[in-house]
Structures are given as C-alpha cells and as structure tokens.
Amino acid sequence: MEPILASQPPRPAAAVLLAAGLAGSLILACEVAATVATAASADRAYIPLVERPLPTPTPTPLPPDVRVDPACSDFQHGTREDPSGEYVCLRSYDQRSISLAGWRLEDAAHHRYVFPLFVLAPGEKVKVHSGQGQNTQTDLYTGSNLIWNNDGDTVFLYDALGRLITSYSY
Ligand SMILES: [Ca+2]
Image (cartoon, rainbow, N blue to C red; front, top):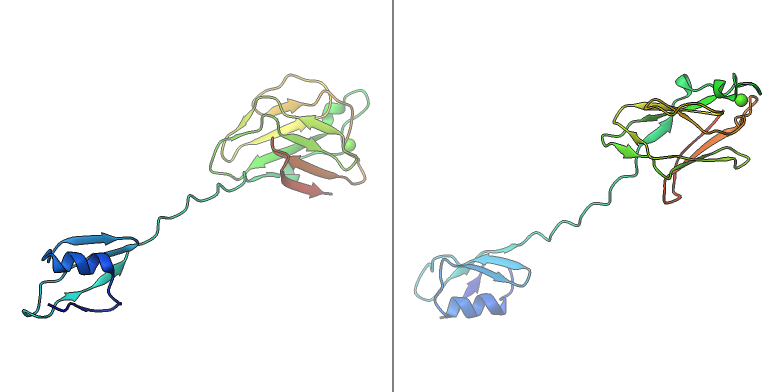
C-alpha cells in the first residue's frame, strides 16, 4: 500500500504507523500531530497533517505601574522648621499590590530615600514627606531635610533592583 499524504511530504513516524495499520490513531511525531484518516480505498489513504501549536513562552511580568501624581504632591510648602510640608505623592495604576520595600526616591541632586517595608495596593497613593513623622499606610517620612527644590526639580523612582520605574520633572 502506498500512502498518499494530503498536504505535506511524508513524515517517517506517520508512514510507519500507517503501514502498521493504525488508521484512526492520533500520531504525535516530533512537532507534528496527525490523525490517520480511514483509507478511502484499498490502496490509498489520506493523512491530514496538523501542526501542533508550540508551547507559549511564559510572558515577562510587566514592570510595576507606579507614577508621581502631581495633583496630590506639594514641592513648595516645606520649611526649615517643618520640612514635612513638602511631599511627593506616588500613585499606583497597577492591578497588583506593589511592595515598595527597598525602592528609592531621588532628586536631581541624588539625595536618596530608601523605602521601608511598605505595600501599595492597586489604585492607592502614598505621600512621601521630607522631615520627621510617624509612618502610616498613607504617609511616609524620609527623616531628611528639604530636598525638592521649589523652582524645579526631578523625581526619580527606582525599584529594589535599581530599575527606573518613573520620573517626573516640574
Ligand atoms: Ca521644596
């Protein structure tokens, strides 16, 4: 019996199984999945060959979507006596809860604040104040002096691996 293949050149494994009389069996040969059709006549058979989809690679996770929210930030109103009047407001636009532990904020002059253990829930925001204060779920305090220049500066936010997540200039 000489098999006739419907769409592609003969594949050795399929041909062997066909010769063994396995009509109707599912054949998995290398990357090819084929179903052996019922022989149309005593001397012909048709094998539709179907490419098996390759496994989908695991997608790379998107970087966290956390940005400076200018509308709830205040870079102007800290004083020497009370630096906490200036703060940068970070808002999550991510669907996931984002751990900010080990993340850091920097200004253009590379003053640096490293976040403590803190989780930003989806859609939530946190104000990072200069100066002293009690950290809460909505307000963090850097413990440092004023860092955000009133006449213009840039906020850089890096994750714990040092990747730039966002920046904002005013
Ligand atoms: Ca300021």
